[in-house]
Amino acid sequence: MLIAEIEEAVSVAVRKEITGALASFGIEGDDRREIKADFQHLRRWRKSVEQVQSYTLRAVITAVVGGVLGAAWLAVKAWLGK
Figure 1: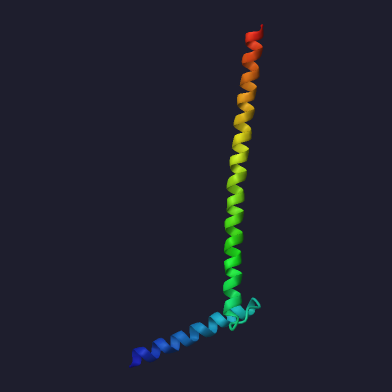
Figure 2: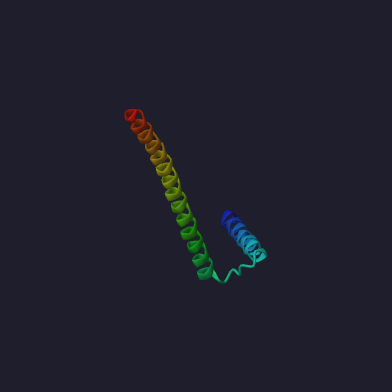
């Protein structure tokens, strides 16, 4: 019985601390749906930013490789033209 009472007391204390921490950020503990929606939005935003970074890296690599191949092609044309 004593262990169950201690677990309950710890659970209540943790809930109070979490509620207090969220309240310090301006988040009310009763707005669980709003909090969940906010975190889902943040996750979607993070994933879209990561995807844009990936596409940007691919575009930069493609541009560099294309520039190097174009320069090589011009060098070959110039060398064969002489």
